[in-house]
Image (cartoon, rainbow, N blue to C red; front, side, top):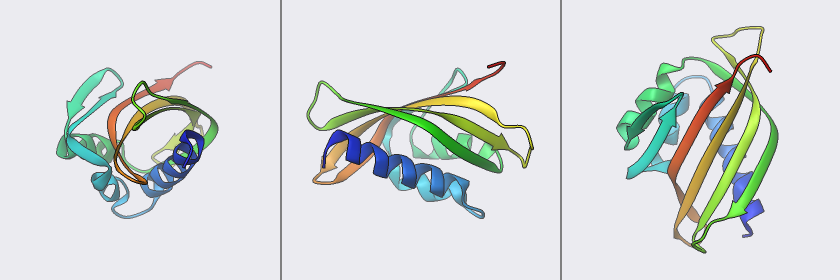
Length: 125
């Protein structure tokens, strides 16, 4: 798969799963490893437990993706993904702009984990 194909498949899976009612973010646990790092609004957490806890702490969300940019990394087994969109938090009628970056690293043919993730809300845009 090309970097673009990997990114599109990952983004569709990630946000559909995150937004799903019920366990939502809990179903993303397999995407993270102990070395995975996430910076969420300036707060850094590491490992699946801490990352899933942070995602679950956001509450009910609904993402709308408006743009995806993709680059192959310096390693042929890694892909950098930059996502821009809107998110409704807690059933709010007013979406907030966000941007999120992922670095995916391959663990084998067609298999990736999130090594790095950075999330920011963009107020006032």
